[in-house]
Amino acid sequence: MVRFSVPEMHCAGCIASVTRAIQGGDKAAIVTASLETHLVEVTSHLPVAQLAGLIEDAGFTVKPVA
Image (tube, rainbow, N blue to C red; front, side):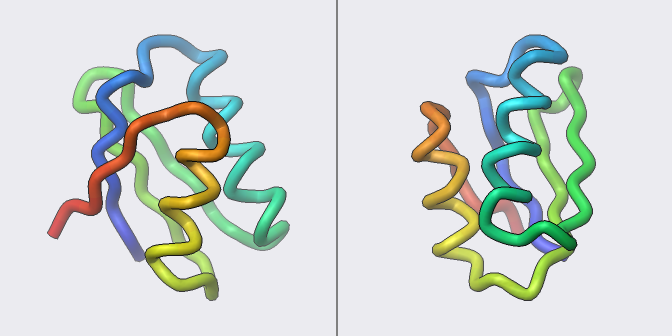
């Protein structure tokens, strides 16, 4: 599992956009997001950099979280 901070994520529509973006690259990805913490957790076979790129391509700033 990989965790990202997505500070611009403020509504259910944002979560849907992030989820669609990730699952567009990996249909089997499991995505969990929290509006309270602005964290997105992803279980995927894709590399971290590629996952981050998918989120950024959807228009969000993203930072990996340890």
